[in-house]
Length: 383
Image 1 (cartoon, rainbow, N blue to C red):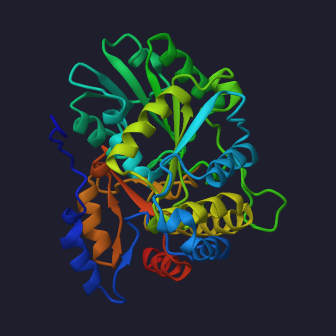
Image 2: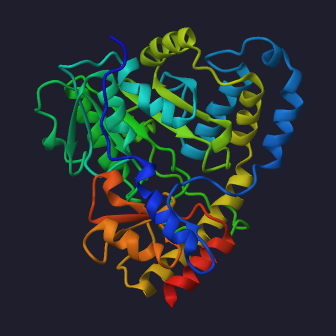
């Protein structure tokens, strides 16, 4: 049958007119809409890419499941950064060509169809819904997936999307709430799909210095033993190096979890050529092992978010530091995201309309902009 049709308000061309207005503003446009990194790729990553440029994994076909070194690096990262022992919970891994691809193909690779239901938060990353639609399955949106009563007894539920820290809201789930989702999903034979791409970007109690012994505070992982009850069965976790190591253009991410599900997905991925290039796999391994560079990036984002939150308050938005992720999520002053978008564009600032994420009464401001851009935006918002 191929891919099914999809529909979504998630269309960046819809903000083109606002960008034209912003570019005409005094000082030009400051784009705080798309969460695309602007900082340098770590030296360790660039060196690893160069060294591997003529390896057998470069001139020959690379391994779909990842090189032995990359697979070891993923396991080491889970142990060091997430307090997860993949071997102990019988989990496997497979690299993906960026996390968006992993999200968009998830329902299809799990063989969901028209009678199957995939649960997701009402306010969420749009590709969850698009991926479910592409598979021809049904979307069930709930206010809070941790409220398991809202989906546990719905016929046909085959998977539940969890996103912590959340894009766009910054909400972080506790281990107890995560464990409740996993337990309820297992009761009905559903898979937990945990998008944890911002896991190392937590701000509750975080310091503002890369010099501290351990400024990184990982959010609870769905594969952590106390969350998954010591087994990866029915749990899949997605992670990306785009934010932690500024590697968005490298398209480096992975899925980890239930070994039987990973084995099936890997077989299909091999046949359709969804494989990370060999030299990039070496760069990815280096990025996972270089947690010192992640700490430096963590401090950058902590500072930028603090400046942005203060500036948005000065402009009249009611907001606080997010619990996690890289965005400030606010309720529109006018009550409508597009009206606020128009007013912000007049001073040269572009945000993301909340309608893209299922909340037209809100806006999302990204901290993935340079220090200079954030400072300039703060100055304009304070006028």
